[in-house]
Image (cartoon, rainbow, N blue to C red):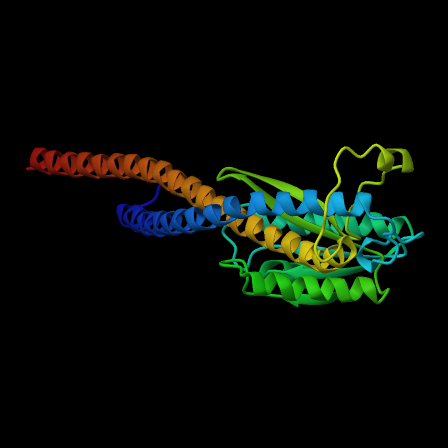
Length: 291
């Protein structure tokens, strides 16, 4: 049976741990409110951008001239972008992304395609390298407060890989923020830019005629890189909000577990103290009887 001193030390240790987890939960909650507001403000813009891009691509007379819209006849090389956080203590947030990225890579290699793995986030970089993955590009230090300039840099690197023909498709693996206790793992194709094909009959029955300034091809050409940037920026914000939500939930669970352990330790301490007092009383009575 543990001594009173040992139990006291364990109680003090658990109390200190609970203070840390409570503080981390409060910090994560504050960051979550900020990041959640950012992603909720971006979503309508991103959705409108997607609708406009699809409309321009559908009704453009010739989309083959745009490199980012071109569908490769054969997908030989695929870039897999794993978007994780820079810190741990967030439950399965980082592990889920890494696991899914490795599954995607294994499936592609089984089908005969080559892969190029790109990691965003310190945890993803470290884990993937530990697993023996050769990383094409890495970015770190973005998960806490991602900026549009960061997304633009990543998007330009992906565009360069695609336009130069080094990769035929780009897939982005990240966590989509649903609520502080729920994150949805996403696996999106960023390049080529998705578009909905329409037949010539649909073009003839188009209900509205849009007028573009300067013209539709020029607008489409300028919007295609912007679409990729917005897609990457949205993924960064979704991942950042998901990370804080996962960390807040993990720290709350850790605090609750610490409360349960403290209850068990306090009960054990009281029992041990009662046993010690009873033993002392028995020794005093036995000594008195001996006299």
